[in-house]
Image (cartoon, rainbow, N blue to C red; front, side):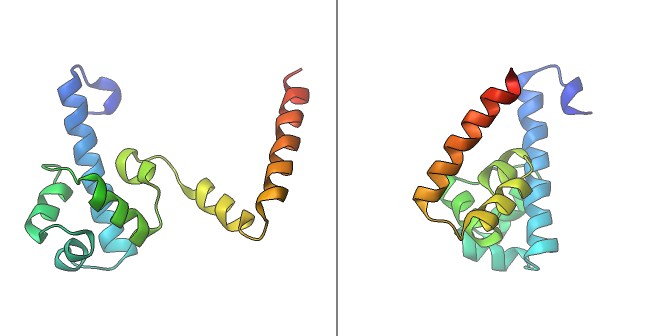
Length: 119
């Protein structure tokens, strides 16, 4: 079953919950190298509940997602929806050396450039 073949909203939500659980487990195992107990303690849930989340049978609350985001460096969009956050990370890393005024001026240049490109 794929997201495109889902017929009802509840089926889609269940599939998204399963995929979200897989992403969280992948972050825990392959990136953070933590066991369930360690990550659960860090994000403020029980290890049993984290297991349910990873199995697609539960959802984290905002507070726990925020903590996972801070620990992992992934965006909430990636954790919740699987949206690629590499561009966000790379952009933040590249822009960290510039002050706000320079960034605002650069944004204005990009806006003007996009107007020219669309023509």
